[in-house]
Amino acid sequence: MENLKHFLLALCAAAAAGFVSIIFVLRWVLYFKEGLAWDGGLAEFNWHPVLTVTGFIFLQGIAIIVYRLPWTWQCSKLMMKFIHAGLNLLAFVFAVIAMVAVFDFHNAANIPNMYSLHSWLGLTAVILYGLQLVLGVGMYLIPVTPVSWRAAFMPLHVYSGLLLFTSVIAVALMGITEKLIFGLKDPKYKDSPPEAIFVNVLGVLLVLFGGLILWIATRTSWKRPSDQILHSLHTNGGGEDNSKVTSALSQLPDGSDAYGAGDARKRSNKSDEQAN
Ligand code: HEM
Ligand code: HEM
Image: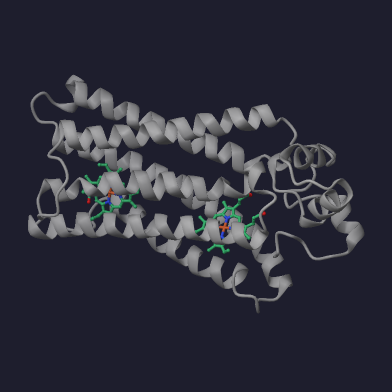
């Protein structure tokens, strides 16, 4: 892979930012807030930030870059599609439970629903994410979908996936700020108590995680190479070790198009791997 070191650096930084975000959100609710429970009270609300950060943000981020991991390039595309779809499905399940927690808490406490910009954009993101999942399965997992549809839909799939991921992080930042303003009474948010500073850092970590995932997902030279290149590599070179995969990638023309090994694919006259 071109710039393997840079890739690994970005990946480790993203993983670190993601893991530390999860630790921060857990420490926030367990140490500064009321803990976790399913009792209609504030401890039930706390599942909302925990599940959105771990599921809707972290798992979705990992699902997005899973095709980019060079050590998975020897796995079949179908298996990677199942992993990508499975992680996205898990992220969706976490998001839905997080929504149930906050609605349940609001209803039990007689707090109105859906009054804030955070809630409008948040619920819209969850619904569109569900739609993205259904369309993703319909297009790329059901074998009857024509290859031409798959290829035509892919740029939209990638764009809407990245837009949703970015929006979810923005929504989380709004939610965090709201919660700090509502929750901190004495001292107030504006007095910068330790909880406020701690949770502001959580917001910074989420932005960092999002930025790194977007960086990894938009480097064309870090894309999974086409199946044709891998195939010829294995039949010519024998083993399936990563160094061969890596060296095959480094032969790709600089800035080769986003969906894989342009030249080889054009010569083979086969359909795009992205469309498979
Ligand atoms: C409420 C979505 C993350 C804090 C809500 C509601 C939705 C939502 C739909 C409305 C519930 C109702 O009206 O009964 C999301 C989504 C998130 C997210 C999709 C994905 C990242 C967060 C985070 C926090 C948070 C990380 C931090 C604590 C709040 C608060 C409320 C709320 C305080 C109640 C006030 C309000 O309705 O705006 N959220 N949320 N949210 N959320 Fe989130
Ligand atoms: C690629 C997002 C669901 C199939 C991508 C990419 C993103 C993305 C951002 C670009 C990744 C890259 O360039 O490396 C999402 C989101 C989903 C979702 C947010 C759920 C809400 C699905 C599902 C399938 C699927 C259910 C069904 C298998 C694919 C395929 C690619 C892809 C085949 C192309 C991979 C490649 O370029 O080699 N997705 N996706 N996606 N996704 Fe999804």
